[in-house]
Image 1 (tube, rainbow, N blue to C red):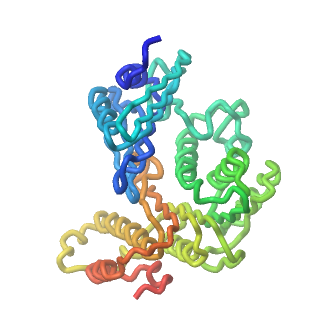
Image 2 (image 1 turned 135 degrees about the vertical axis):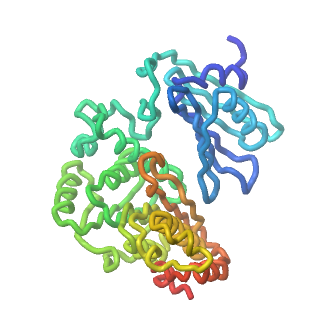
Image 3 (image 1 turned 180 degrees about the vertical axis):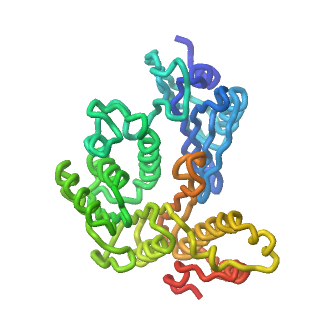
Length: 384
């Protein structure tokens, strides 16, 4: 068998069978932390979407077949020391030594892809929870059939669940494998993601966890508790209660808040800071507060357009939330939760506590003075 090279690996994997290509182990500091590449079909043409992750942001670009080859070569020419490729036809690993020596290993399975006739965004990919493997809570929640097939109408929810688990996968080193981790999900709703989180961390990864779901709808809480009991999820419990008033625990390792409306997100974030939670995962919703506050003579022509002002207020809100968390010792990123084509509001704030507080107080004050705004999170954290 001929020795594998980067070019032969790219020849084999850069096609519609590719599931994803992941670049990790950065060669230097301060740049990209990870890159993922996956195929997408845009206007009937096969492209490759690159997702670049840095400490605080995620960027996306769509590349042609030739462009993605140049892009991969550039990434492995000094930016990353490891790459992995996963395909319906096999897998590959690329390792680059500090001296620049490259080792390429390819495993060919030669299995036929199920979607050779076409490639779509919802095609079968390498998910954390794989299609074809029935997961009880996904079956009961109507996302999967009893045979493990994803219900076509719920494919967006299936992708969203897996995307959420990717965010959790990235922060696993922050959780303990020897002592119980307490996790709170504020505003858990029907708890698709709460069950997914418990299943992944406890059943798949074996982490000792206690998960608390909190919601204002008593009927939802009752149903979720019945399902948790049915699955034997002994350390998963749901309670009726409000985010602002909840005092049920004294210490929490991870706080999750998904689509908590308007300032409810701020109360959840403030509690997470007070608990010194190791990880915060928050998908804000309905950021109305700043929309009713922001005013500036210079920006008045722009703010006169209601839709524009509303969107700018939402972005200002989440950016300021991230900065407040940075000032409390969290390394914070704002990431796309699901593809932006579905909704412009699904951004996720991920904070990982590292202890060193960012000296950003004066900058935040100048921004708030410029906007004439007083966000709730700043007040809750005692920001002056």
